[in-house]
Structure formats: C-alpha cells, structure tokens
Image (cartoon, rainbow, N blue to C red; front, side, top):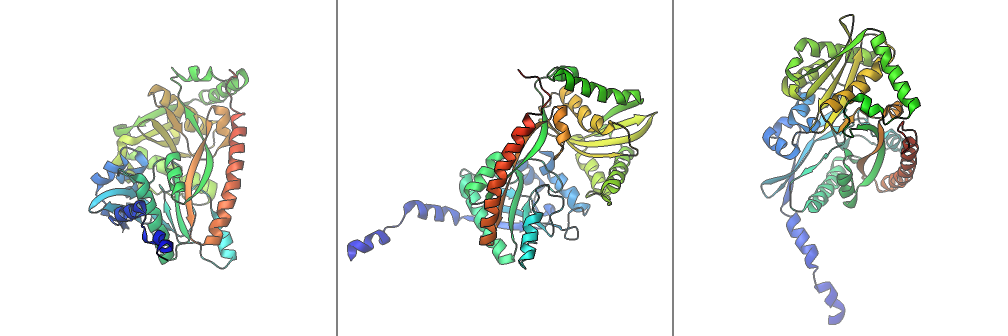
Length: 400
C-alpha cells in the first residue's frame, strides 16, 4: 500500500514553483484610461500612435467609445506584488461594429440557441485595424504572465456572463503566445506597401511590369489634367480650420456611403489635433485653389498609417491618388519602411500593395461553441492561406 501511494505523495516541484510565482500576480480593471498614469502607459507602449495614452484618451473624452456607443472602456493592468508588469487596452462590447475582425456569425449562432453573445471583452484599438502588441508585458517570464492573464480572463468572463474574450490585430509573436496559453488563433489578410530604398515614385514604378506601370501613370495623370494639386501638412502646419474642414469631409463621405456620420466625431479630431499634432499628416487636394478632399494619416516610428478620408465631390481617380500614391510618395521621401493604408481593398494589389497576414486571438467560454469555432477557424486559416497566395500572383511587379 505504501508503494502504491508513494507517487501521490511526491509533489511536482515545477508545478509548485509555478503556483508560487503565480500567487504573486494580481490584476485590476480600469473604466477610464485616465485612471492609469500616462507616463507608465507610455513606458509600456512607447511611440506607437494608436496605443498612445493621448489617442485612447481622445476616444474616451469625445465619447466615441463609451457604454452608450457599445464600447465601454475596461482596461486591464497586471501586477507582480506591487509592480506593474502588464497593460492592455480593453472594452466591453455590446455589438461587433468597428472591429474589422468579423464575428457576426458567432453572435448569430448564439442568438439562435437562445444565448447572449454580448457583452464580450475585446482588447484592441477601437476602429483601427492596425497590427501591434495589444498586450504589453514587462516581465522576465512573459509566458507566465500570458498564462495568468488568460486564466483570469476565463474566470472573469464566466463570473460576469461575458461570452468570451478577444485580442484583435496583435502581432504574430503575441498571437502565438496567446495560442500557447489556450486561445484560438485567427488570421486575415491586409495589403501594405513596403519601401525598398526607392529614390522616388518613378524608381518604385520601375519594379512594375510595363502594362501595370502604364496603368498607374495614366491614373495619376488624370489628377494633373483636372488641375488638382496636393498639399502636405504636418504638425504645427495643421490649423484648427484645416482640421475642422477635414472632419466635415470625413463625416460627409461616411454619411453618403453608409447613412451615418462615422464612428469618430469632431471632438475626437479636435483632441487628436491638440494632443498629438506631431503624429498627424493631412493631405489636401485642391482644385482651382479650393480644397475638395483630404486624408488624415498617423506617423509611426517606421510606418505611415493612412486612416481617414473625405471629399466634397466625386473626382475620377482622386481617392487612389490621395489615399495611396501620395502616401507612397511621402514614405519614400521620408525613408519610411511601410505604408499601411487600412483594411481590405483588393484594388491595392495592382498599385503595389502586398498581401500580409494579420492575427487575432479568441476564447469563447461556452465549451461547445469554443470547440465549433476552433474547428471553423482551422478551416478558415487554410482558405486565408490560399487567398493570400492568389493575391500574390496578381502583384504588378516584374518577374525576376
């Protein structure tokens, strides 16, 4: 009997060590970014314009994200003893609008089975399909922190009757770490432009085959033929009047396209201008000295993010010129490695934007739904890989 009981009496030192370390972790939820010190936040997230304290503050202060809009701020902080070791911007979602990682079918399946899919917890940058480290960890053993976070999220979701938790547009390394900690992996495709030390736009076009190069030149020529000029404004060059004009264009274009004024309001853009002017780039299209269209981009350390666009009138090829070609011109001139012009858009391929894989991580509390969705995502990833390969065959570059 003693021999039979012996294995049960011997403890696992690795397991006990892990439990001992994990017992030193704790966490706290914050319903406002202002409850977290801006200096600490910057220490974790650095200069990424979308995870800056000021950007998230502008979203909250303008009420673009709030319980009323279905984006209740619910940020997560993790501590080891009294030391802050992880931060994550988070939101309790009452719908799936403005996310760009689509789970409407999951919500519909819940509804058909008499279950509530909302609220759910979402770690992301609202209305911004921009890749980055959504959860920032400063710890000698990140794996343990990921395990702690996923365990606490699972427990909290069950207690609060949230359907699950999601981390959208995290980078590949973080997606893998979350996957190792038990989350489901989801992939998608975006189209981005990359700078191979081009001297100018013509140098970039030399990489195209003759037919595609001719098409781009013809498209760009339409702008000059219509007496349209483009002006770049950055930082202090952006006046309050210019920002207000851009906002009017943005809301007018959104209203025409979708019937509402857009996710972002004038207060958000005013705050962004006041708090982050040095990160902003506005491009104006002028016809006969009158501004007829504008784009607003954000400038990262080595990436230009083309985000918002608006126009007062329809002009042939102006969207392509202002939203794509001008961004490429700016990136080349300022030696910026990547131009991220936003989600989707297969029309970008012919203009030299290459398909790249995006990542997100998900966990659904209901075990049957979690299993079914995991199976779906496995099959979806196979289709995404095929789609990405097909897109690569359509690129305009010469065959070396």
